[in-house]
Image 1 (cartoon, rainbow, N blue to C red):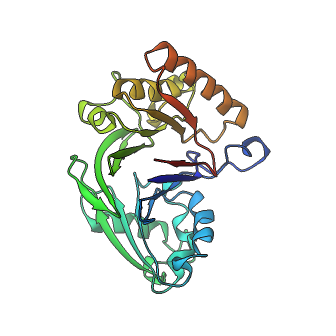
Image 2: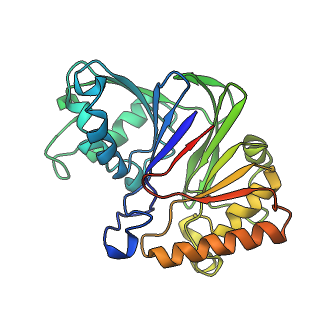
Image 3: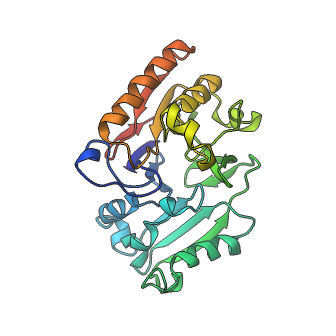
Length: 284
């Protein structure tokens, strides 16, 4: 299992000299199984550069298949999709998973983004690739995607919810939990079970604790929330992710230092801490 980061920001892209080290693109993670099958976690603007890289392989020849799993459909998690070059190549096939009570609901959300008021594409039907949509249940039931066994639970995210996803392969596990805004007390029992013992927990770490307290209605985590979830679930590595668009690299550096201190103070001394940045690859 291998995870590569192409976008690590939240809300809106934040390019510029202040974000050069960690990157300014919104959420997108490339996940590969042992057979090199591709699963893409979220479709923020990081998807654009990933798409260009993928054109060098089968997806550039109309002979590729990949899965895309959306944690939710806020724009910073789907805004790269209309600019993802492989979807314009006839012969390619994509299975797009996302939250929703039905495939029709998911299709309506993605079509809305391509409404002619917002996009020159007009409709997903103008894409060259074949797109198959699947709604994901958040009841913890197991489904297969590429070579992974996958489970999903939902976290509160302001006025809506976002899927947290656990991927397992060959005895290894990775959890992706972006855009989590827990109630007091932290994750639910079901979500803690989803996180339990993960080799890697990629967790929303949008804010400092002070900024989180001022912006509770946005439904996002502070680095302290991420640490608490990691310690409670006894994960092996915590990966900070989805930094606020207004945080320069120096602020992210401070989040890392605070995260390490909080882990050490609250029983997480054995938990490795990594800050996601564009270009980072983690292997299990």
